[in-house]
Length: 565
View (cartoon, helix red, strand yellow):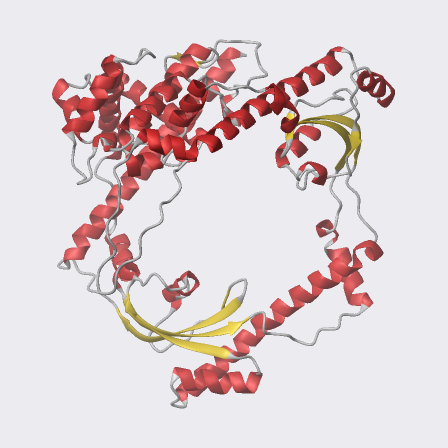
C-alpha cells in the first residue's frame, strides 16, 4: 500500500511521518471475522471483553488497532502489503501475548531494552542497513510539533509492549523439537545435487482425432449436469449518478490542491526527464538534479487538481445516491408502481439490468462483484439497495425478482458440453500417451541410447514432438531461477538413470531424466547438519507459538461472545 516508504524514506521523511500519524487517528472500519461475533449491524450489547479491551466500544477498538498499526509501522517502516484482516489478527494476537505477559509476571521493558529496540527498528534504518541517529532525531523533532497528540511516550509504550511480546514468544517457542530423521530428510532434499535433462511436449500441438457422438455428449451432460446449472440471477433496475455530473459543483483552493499532493505523493510522480545522448566513446553525462519539492509539485499540479476534483465529485455523487436510497426506504417504496411514482417526482429514470449472477455482476455496471453482492441482498422486503460505486460514479439498485437456479436443456448448452467433453478426452489421451512414451524412452535408454536420442526416436514414432534440454548441476538450495518449478516436484521419487512420469501442466507435458544424483553427507559431522537442525527447530517453535496464541485468541473471542449474549 505504501511500500514506497521503504525506498524513499530519507527523501520524504516528513510525509512518512504524517502517514504514520494518520494511521493513529483515522476512524477504523472493522471487518471482524465470523468467529469474533462483532459486526456493525449488531448493537444489542456493547459488552465484549477481550483481554482487557471491550470490542463493543469504538474507543477500545481504536486503541487495540491503533497500537497494532503503530507497532507494524515502527517494526517494518510500512504496512508491507498487509491486508486489514492481517493487521486485525496481529492486533488480537498481540493483545493475547500481552495478557500472557501479565499472567506470567513478565516485567515492563527497561529503558535499555527500549533503546535497543529502537535501534533495531526498520523505520530508523539508513541506506547501509544500520541504525541512523539522524532519522531518529528528525522523528523526535517532528513529534514535538505533532498536532494529533501522539507523543514520544506513545512510541515508548508501544515499543515496551513489543519487547514484552517478544519475551512471551521466546518462552512459548522453547528450544524446538527436531528428530534426526527430519534433519537428514531436509539435508537430502536441500543439498542433493542433480544433473537433469528434460523432454517437453507442447499440449496445444497435440490434436487427437475426436468426434464425439450425441450419445456420448448426452451421457457426459447427464453425469456433469452440475457444471451447466444456471445459478440464481437477480433481475433489477438502477439509477446511476455519474460523478462527471457533479464536477460543476466542485471548487478547490490552491492550498487544498497542495495538501492533497503532500498527502499522496506516490500517486503523482513527476514526469521523467529526457537524458542527453552520450558522445561516442564517453559515458552519458550525469544530469541528475537535486529534488525540488516546489518544482516537483508544479510539474504534476494539473493532474493533482483533476484527481482531487474527481474524488470530491465522486463523494457528491455518493451523497446524492445515498439520499435517494434513504428517501425510497423511508417512503416504503416496495413495488414497481411505487418506484415509478417515487422516481418521477425526482425527475429520475430507472434503467433495466439484464439478469446477472453473483459471480458475473451486471455488465451494464462493469460486472462489479460488489454490486452483485449488494443486489443479492435485495428481496421483496428490501426493495432498494445501498449506494454502490460504479465505474462512472454511484448507483442505486431496485429489485424486481430473483430467478432460482435451473438446469438448462442439453440443446441449450450442447456447444459447451461438446467443448468440455473434447477437452477432457484430449487431456485423458495425453496422459495415456505420456505413459506409453515414458516406457518407450526407458526401453531406448536400456538399449544404450542417450536421453536426447531416445526422446527423438520416440517422438518420431508417436508423432508428438519432444523438445529436449540439458540443465546444469544444481541443488534445491541454489536452483537456477529459470528452472521450471513443475520439474522439482518429480525429484523426490527419482533416482539416477530414471525417467519421471510425464509432469503435466496447463500447456505442456515434461519428462525429467536424472543423469546424475549426488546425495550429501547426512551425518552430524556435516557443518550443514547443525545449521539445518537449528532452522527446523526455529520453524517448529514458531509454528507452535503461533498455533498456541491463535487458539488462545479463538477461545477468548468465543468466551466473550457467549458472555455478551
